[in-house]
Image 1 (cartoon, helix red, strand yellow):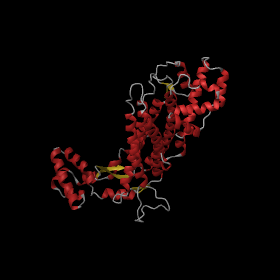
Image 2: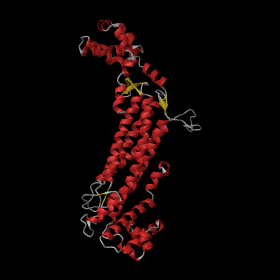
Image 3: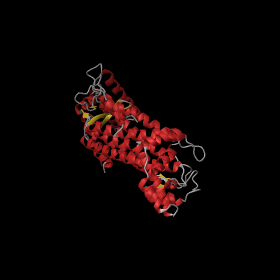
Image 4: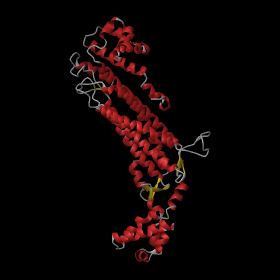
Length: 430
């Protein structure tokens, strides 16, 4: 992933130094397991532990000749260890190292993203409580529907992110498996006890059954969890983009001192952070599709998944880490305009009360079909002539036969729409 969208802690996980260090951890643990069985002399194990190391430039140079990264790595390690290196990689195949080490890297990445989500949840909860009773027009199909509160929007995002946290934790468990079962998963030249020993030491679980590799449905689950997180972030971003539109202007991204919005138009204050998040979400979602394409490999394994995973797993974890940090920053300093929200509520002439009028008419004995037609006729007159809906209803003789002036006044009371907000908050923030 390009540095522009990388944060140091996450990027470090996918650097060659950490990758090869994880490979070496697996190899040394396997040697220790063999030594427990008496298959490697203690003196040789001590040498391996003390001297085992690698040189990244040397690995790259060797790989140019051998065209195999694990062999290049083992050759570099052997140059440090000397004759006792003959015990390294005993009974193993490359994927025993690659897949087990990858599980360690993905687990590290998951831990960072889990912390990111927890930070975002804190900001979402704080904002939900702050704007709990801040009235805002609810919209369906982009059209005014009925009033909500801005706090409910944050509560909705909070609840969704909680689900993402649960999914990611589950995916972390799914991916936390290792395998040291040899070329086709049958332990042909290695004892199952080696796998058990290594996985226990690395705090992984042995894959109950494997081929040459750990099955890729595990990785796909992890990548889909990341895609869902990215989609939820984009959901937040899209809402901010709509609310920042000039015609709406109910909320706005923070705009830093000295920031400029356009090379041509000095007045512009664009929601570039949210737009950035919408774009990055597309990449993470598409990577999840690629991860699912990696599941149906040939027989006990082909290598078609390898080139894909070298890109999509680092890129998606790096991007989701970046996206979570960025959306948290945007929401933390989001500019909110409650007065504008009230102005927008009033701009639709009170038409949002149409359902309450409909229900009152049916309560008073009018059929639903007739009530709907009557309310719709008055609503269309209000909209087309830009007149107050309540005033039009007060002049309708049929309406007056069913609804008193006092009842009509109560129908248009805005506080009616917030009466269950506290109940919803109790369910979300219990």
